[in-house]
Length: 380
Image (cartoon, rainbow, N blue to C red; front, side):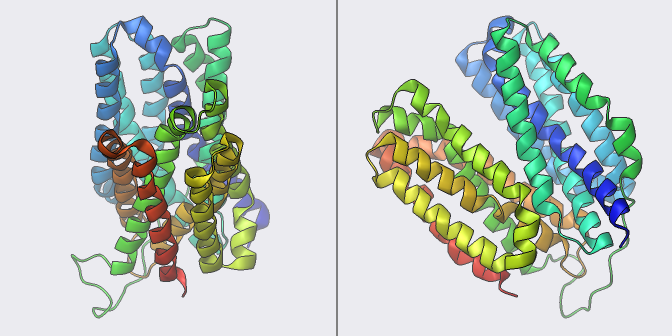
């Protein structure tokens, strides 16, 4: 293997993983400014976020067909460029309608980028016989952290969302001419015997990878949307302490994914995923049963550490299954993942309304237990 060629290709692919995280971080961190700028109320903002998620799902469903038609390289180039433009247009919105139109374009672009970038990462692992998926997803998480921090920085200086997007995304786009030529052309998939699969049926292993990914995204989504509220309303934490929930979770996620390639090589997929899921069970147990908010923050840090390697492993294993194209595997896992992220956290709200937030989040503990059992799928 040409190490310098692999390093360049891996870095170029990671550049595109940064894109959705960076843009989403900017968009969500500037929502208060966009709300004031467009005159939207809370219900309209909620509807806009729902449109963002639903259009992403539409793009996820169609991306496999587009990749088969054009190749993941072209779809990723178009989707990532459109995503940069769409988030910049969000900053120009002056009404809820114009912001909604920009959010629809953002959601469609995010869906295309998600499947095509994971397809590219699977191709990199196949071509160079090297593990790199954890590094890719670390880049995505890092993009989200940078996007949120720069959003807070620009807001602190009183600069609007449009200026924020132009400066940060413009700087990011400067490296695009270097990264684009290093994207890989999709390779044909080796044939598989009739006894292993059929023309119209996906292997159960790939579907189960998607289901496990859905459960993992559901747990992660619960941290982002309900973690700070749990600490503030149930554990008696201050508002500033509660705000550290997602930071603690995200920081450990990024850190562990940066070392995920080495951990996968030394420990293996099953060991890393199983003990990671077990750590998430311990972390969620601390969150639910500890009274001290600081201990709860430690629990969320444990969750970030434990769940961080699971998604990259599932994408990698599904994409390497014989007879399944990386695009099809990536589409299945992505669709199921985002379905969990989109629908499960809001469902917790309905349960919490009737039975209390702490009781509702017991469901997340059950989800972490199911993930732990599900990692037995990765033994071989």
